[in-house]
Length: 394
Image (cartoon, rainbow, N blue to C red; front, side, top):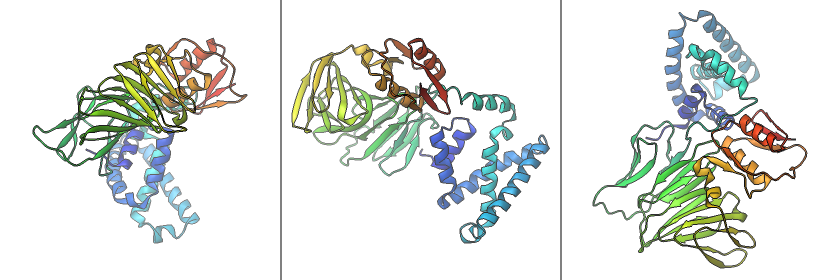
């Protein structure tokens, strides 16, 4: 079932998987008074481990206790009214203790991991691994959030007779109870953040959708009425279940793609320059800006939607490289390639001397670390280095 955000971020920290963005969110939640009770419960569990470790690591425990006391005294000097006006002393001390524990790292609880953890932290300054897990979330119609990477297999939620389940393969699917009639439209949103592996979901009609990193899709848990409507942000690959009575419509950046049953890819990361590619069947693309127009695609064709629409034949393997596990550099501008790296590794690309005028070709595996990718770029004439979560292009 849905998990609370604070526990989710703390668990990811203790597992060593917290990203810089998630670290900032964790600190924000720790400073939010609404999470006092939740933090109390987490502290109780963590401090049990702390007390159990005292006999084995008395020197470390004493060191932490001294730092906690120093932290409390320092905060009281800087904000003397805080503990009276906004916090009770017990919770304030617990919060300060926990923040110190976070700053020291999780080696206190898992001492056998001390050396690898320190090495990994140092290595992160000069290298970043490819996504090791799927960090996607599903926001349910009631606003609660299911975190897929920490959810077990089986039923995750029930909404109006529709079951949201996680299969043993890690895939997400919706199941309707036999004979159940659904009349109310309820929407869920599947979000796959930057730095996350590709996620796929089977909708209630049997259609399947794969989402690239930095993408999301909003869809009804059951399709009611004469159309199947979903909204995409980012990039998604669709295999739509055929239903002549209900056309399937994807809205992305003001462009509608209509199908009855087919396979196609939509790259809508940049709303004013979406790329829609048909792999099988037939699709109709419609838009109203800057002028109303439409286009019917044939297999192998791609329409690049911007101020001027352009339809070309493309190499389908290159278009679908993100789903097949590699970066295809052919036919892309330098910035388009760097944008892909930013989303996949959750980094920032910095052009210290402007965008280089270099054409890149070939393939690079998406399972490589950022340092290995940088080496491949170096072989192609791109001078670059990794520095604190950024790829610096010289």
